[in-house]
Length: 471
Image (cartoon, rainbow, N blue to C red; front, side, top):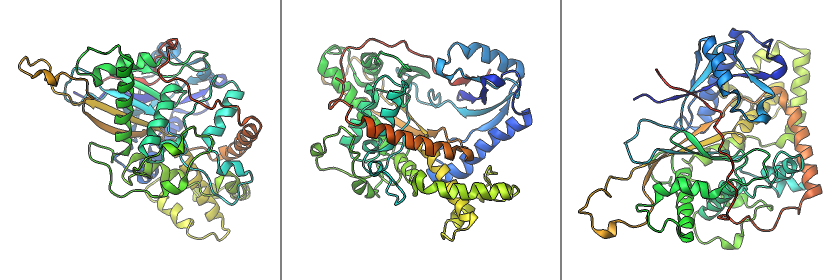
């Protein structure tokens, strides 16, 4: 049986809905640029075993128009400022990682967990003007800004530095807070359907008990004791443990990598993290070098100057391009992201000689890092349980509450190149986030929300991915 597919289509501002801003050929080229950037740049940086670059496909225009009408009422209100491209017939076709069909048949459908890990390190650039940026991570500061602007009703206590630490206790703590307050950074799919996520700009907290209801068949081998509080807690702990194992593995079913990133110990803690450092027992610090989080972190750290140090180089490059517009092609500002592109960028950064090539290379590297900071992880779990419980000859002790073994795979999505002209906007946003945090820091509660409290069940949203099934 073939895998189902996901279609990603371009979107335009709503005011351009009647007049598409580009031709079908330009739309095809834009999506091909995304494919080339993923396959020739991010694949090399993150590892081809984690990246699915996809391919450009042409679709019948009537099919696209009908699809647009059908999914419109499923789209979140805050995304309706843009409309789907119904004119070009072009789309990016990717495997549907939420519902892999090539797996051993079991009684339970595959689980897929989407995580947006965000930036996992504190900057140390000499160009940083506000010392707070070297003590509190970008994500934790950004939480204050988003809540103050009404983007979210509640602060998330998730801290990316805990997830990227490689320490199992800190990773467990981080994922627990992602579950408590998912925002748009955590979703759970069962058999391709989204069963747990956050509701945008809602006063309701997501219903953790609803998640537990979906997880029980995967972590209990019998249905007695399912109502006990301790059992619910153990189910959630087992679920988080499986996720941690997958994130520390080499991208498949193998053991954790032997070579470890010991820099993790020196990167330290974000001061806004609610993890109690005294709780750390003896255990691994740092990420295995073949793990997906290690590869993402190394790519994120290509942003070595911070936006404050990069901006003067960006201005130098921008002025050069205004004076010599044809240089935009030679410096490959907008691509093509071919097989030699990454090698050229690495060569240009060998020496800080004040050249425009050096400035272009540092801007390119910053854009690579920004893509890695904004990527999504898809952790697919397939239960490898055997049909043992139907055997009447099984000894009674086989029927106990225990976690089922899983086979796992990890993939990275959302690897589009960041626009060159977004750097000025990034600097302004950085200044706003830091300023807001300095004004509001200390407003966070000193403790987390009760993890298994009774919460009002949020209406489950249909995910906005478009599934393309072969007919």
